[in-house]
Length: 138
Image 1: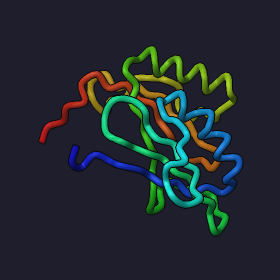
Image 2: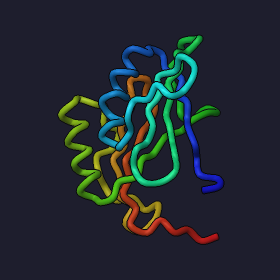
Image 3: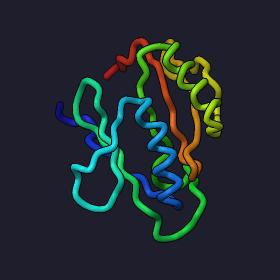
């Protein structure tokens, strides 16, 4: 599929801590750890239906607090197939003491948009979203 995102690389302040976090979270989102890519970046590859998509981690060269309102990544969202999947993922986050930014709720982005927002160890905003009709006007 032309134009579909292929991968995203995230810069993290503590590689070991982030490997543990993403190593727990990403498999619940149908990613598996992969050693297929060259280099030293830990990488997870999406194993669901659809195009290849991977997430890799890199150790930061300088230490600073992540601010999603400066140039760079604001947040990263993952699709769910139902509201129940969003709720189940929320339960998982609570059980594992992941920082919740916004509990599951409907948002007025599009009709039926239902999501939970949480943070990784560096404060990068992550989201799991169910969107029943993602069609957008073009």
